[in-house]
Image (cartoon, rainbow, N blue to C red):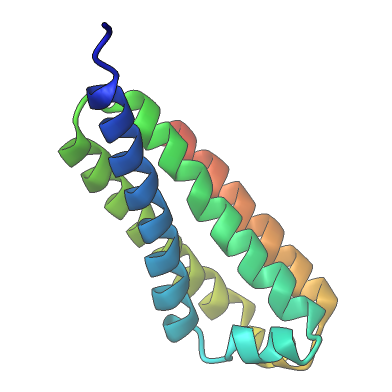
Length: 132
């Protein structure tokens, strides 16, 4: 009989950790931004949804790259945390350059939300590529 427990256990550990990292990213990201994304999204604010969606997708691109290119769980976790930090620094940098970013999101400026979503995805793609 083939022992499938080690791969199944590894899968479980990596997927639970990846989803926990996504959850932690959303928690920290929504605390770093001055506007309250979840409240705005519940109110129908499309700009907040585009902005947060792009940020989460951008960060999530780094996780499979880190999984595929690191031989150990510790290295996966280390590089995933590095990608996490890069995403937060990207937000702080771009929000500083864009001036009035949070107010634009809060007032449902969909152009700003879309641009930030695309910037977030772009940072995620570059970040993921750098993890290879």
